[in-house]
Length: 328
Image 1 (cartoon, rainbow, N blue to C red):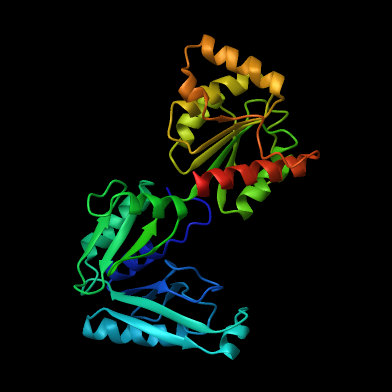
Image 2: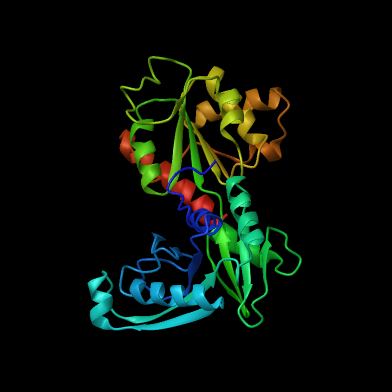
C-alpha cells in the first residue's frame, strides 16, 4: 500500500499504457544546484494529453511534453538538455539559471511494460529498488540493495535518497515512503505528527487508551488502538520506518520497544530521563534482549538542544530521526 506524500508517477504511466492511451515517463537526471525538483523527479505524460508529476517549476515542462509526444510516435528514448536562463530561473523561484537534463522513455517501445510493472510491484510491496538505465546502450534493469554490479554504491544512494549517475548508468532510486509510528498519544505527539508529515513521513499514532487516542485530540490522524506490539506488527516495521515511544508506561512502551528491536526499523527513540532509561535497560536485559540490540535505542529521545516545551521536544526528536536516516 502506498502511503504519505508518495507520488504514484510510474503507477500512473503503467495505467495509461495498459488503458491504450500511451504513456511516456520523463525523469530528471541532472539539474542546476537549487532546482525546485531534485534529480529523480518524474513526469508521466499520456498520449491523450494527461500529466502527472513534474520535472521543473514550470519552465521546461512544455518542451518536455512536446518531445514526449514525439517519442511516443517514434518509440525512441532520448535525453533532453535545456539551458535555463536567469529570467526563467527567477520565475520559478531560483536565484540563477543553469542546466537541466531529462530522460524521456516511451512505455512499451523503450521502457518495457514488464519492467515498469515490476517496478510498480516493488513500490507497492515497499521494496527499495533502483531503475538502472545505461544511457549508452539503453539497457535497463531493476537493482536492489546488494546488487553485485553496484556494490555499496547503490546502498549509499538508497540511504541518501539520491538518484544519479554511476558511470554511464543512471540510477533512479525508488525508496518506500517514510513512516513514523508514535507510541503514546501524549502532548508531545500533537506537534510531532504535524512536523513528521511536513518532513515527508506518514505518521501513525498507537495508543490503546481511549482518553489519549481520541480523535478530538488528533483530528484527521491515523490512530491505532491495539496493543503497541500488535499494532506495530500490523503497521509494518521495515527499514524506512521510525518508532518513537512516549507513554512513560512500561506496560505500553516495553512491548513496542521489543517489537521494534526485533525488526529493521532505522530508528527507535524512547522518551524518559537517564534514570528512567536505566530502569528500562534493566527490564530489557532481564527479558533476554542482548546488549547489541539494546544499543539501537536512542534515549533519552531527541538531540540535546535544550528543548523544554512539547513542540521543542518534537523538533529535537525529528532532528535526531533525520540525522539517523541521512547519516546512518
